[in-house]
Length: 342
Ligand SMILES: [Zn+2]
Image 1 (cartoon, rainbow, N blue to C red):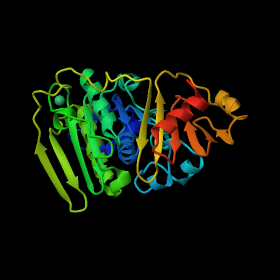
Image 2: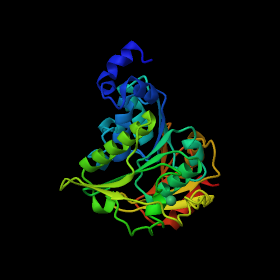
Image 3: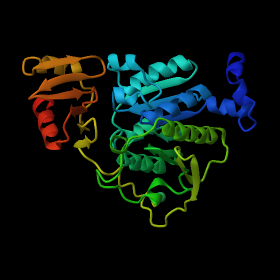
């Protein structure tokens, strides 16, 4: 049963026969994880929180910059001034939209060491990512734990989405068997993106999540959209007989590392350093340690920034660091070892 106050809130959605009161009750018990909260994640999270999904976890590793505001509809200028990570700002805004939803924002880089924990208990996982590697990892986790997931991507005026039901449909690796080499695929940083395409793909992804939660039949095709021409296409995809993930080989989940660097190219160049051995990292202690040796250091509860050797580095409580204005991974690794240590 839906209580009276919530019955009013969701009345228009409950009038839709495929949802009804029964569907609304199922939504209120639903547990959704959104990995990545940029433009896609912003749209997906807003729609699912408004729809009354019971529990939503949002995972993102980044903070907000001005060039995000054109399409990342959850954020505003105050979030940038407050130097909030996306997951924290998202949680704050979403709680104001619907206080009856349990919302948890987690600032983290999703990788093999944490992704199974982040996704545990989820009824559906949604892709708000901007990179292939984490998407392959998501595919592995979803297949391993038999959790439905919805793939989505958007770039320039184009987007695509596909729903993966483990054991039933094609998976992401069936349609894209190998990880493209870094720099060979266009990104929002190199090809640009108009704000309307992630809104459409995000809406399609959120709809699939609602359908999964209420037990309706999902879309079993790859949908591609060009928002500029208005073209929608549906492609039939068949499970691939020699897909490693479908056969239970989870290469991305099993690809272990201690320290890993990833460079982000394009207008905001940066290198991320992830250290999977760091747990419970104190920014306060780091500040005390750095103060006598670096030019500038400041921190809030979400991140610490310092400048050393003419480079600005941002450190997060999960031990992760981002070195800005460079794509030099060995420099990032060196500065990490020198100033943060492991
Ligand atoms: Zn597969």
